[in-house]
Image 1: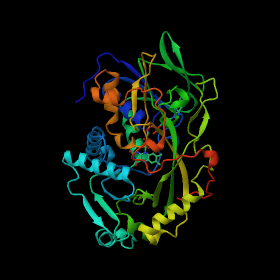
Image 2: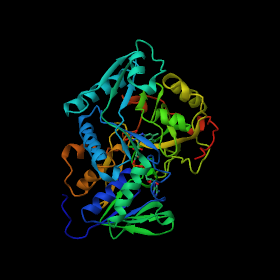
Image 3: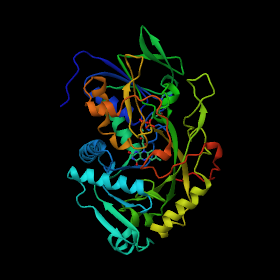
Image 4: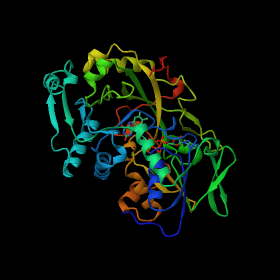
Length: 436
Ligand SMILES: Cc1cc2nc3c(=O)[nH]c(=O)nc-3n(C[C@H](O)[C@H](O)[C@H](O)COP(=O)(O)OP(=O)(O)OC[C@H]3O[C@@H](n4cnc5c(N)ncnc54)[C@H](O)[C@@H]3O)c2cc1C
């Protein structure tokens, strides 16, 4: 049972993505008076988690994140608001032996997870034959006889848009006041009586005892993050299964091939099967809004305002080759609804959850680095702890403000891709919208 704050302290949440919604709910549960603003109602098309499904996994090189993930997975499984949203379908992983960094990341990740008493039943395979009998959806896979793979039944996926809606609804019930549109579109930070305040597009200005800014990849537009975060565009695409195909493949696990990409079981409502292409990334270099020089930083260019931002043309071949290797029966499908999706990358992939230097009431909760969705059930607790000065010292240090770190994808051991071209260098695929 969480302790209630005695006087009704106020909190302003700026951005209703994963960090924002999770903290809005947690602050409300603790008795704070909460206002939350965003340009769009959840699931915002600008949120990296506005999607069908995301991986919920607990293998991490850093055992602190393993513990946090296990805590989150238990909530995904047991919190009634996530019923029908979380699917503990497990994950099949295929990583070429030549991907040394990724191999090591997975080995240590499994070790960390097993130290926590989870995933003790991981299955290991060599070649495609055994896989085809163990997993009906992989019946016609063409893994070579020396290719290694494993299946971790601990974890799976969650429908990320529906998960955000579930948290949004609960926060509303607990009295959180949500404001969207131009009144919720944060444009700048000002000061009123020595306290930070947020100025929105309509001119409305809000202040509060505590302000939490969580604008995801877009955080650097409002706050000078001093080179700690860089917006990375990742690419996803979909195929729409027929009713028969849906029935045949609905029970599949998440399949993650570190070289080729990954796909999910089809969505029950739309029958869309999501394919992600982690081998391709991008950036969008623009003038740093906080610098008077010509300094460039990467900030997002959102697909809803730029409908041609799909996936690079070569992504079509990559998505088809992935399907052809694992589920060749589905490789004939046209790709639809392809899109770029933006994350806020940090060099060490650690989040930034800290008071912004120079302010007494302005915090940032960002730096998701492409792995924050899974923490929707529990990250709010840690953000509240930070504001209340009770955050565990190790987490406090790990998520602290680290000016000037920059971002170079080639220095991330777990990244599949190490070069992110600018959007201006990308030849985008023309595809069509799904008929739902
Ligand atoms: C392709 C892809 C695959 C991913 N896969 C996984 C996965 O499998 N597992 C996992 O755990 N994570 C995954 N992620 C990462 C996850 O989606 C993000 O880590 C998470 O959404 C980040 O949360 P956030 O709160 O920082 O930002 P977001 O969720 O992006 O939310 C930011 C919010 O800020 C709002 N906003 C932005 N600018 C303004 C403004 N100026 N004024 C008002 N509001 C504004 C937006 O509307 C949005 O609601 C993936 C991301 C991508 C792109």
